[in-house]
Image (tube, rainbow, N blue to C red; front, side, top):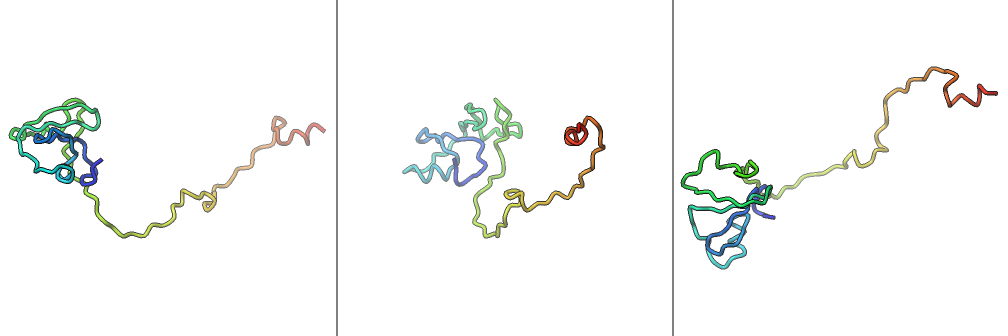
Length: 122
């Protein structure tokens, strides 16, 4: 799981050390060498777990999808950002705070009603 790109859809194989990384920053943190640049890139889709290659010189709009499962892997990267926000209590946790405002309709009395059976049978 990449901590730099939160919505990474593919893993990329580094051509220099032949190891799989989610992003270039992950390679830079773990490897003791710089990332070698190449036009031929090898990916593994995280949805279908199948490998495929793409040439970055001939990259088209159709190449933004996995050729095996059509997973859209070219997305705007969501990076973690520090935030301060106030969180309130979730009302769904404690249902005792919610009162049922619906009105119950009184059922018609009949001889087949089980609730009144003891009064009618004598």
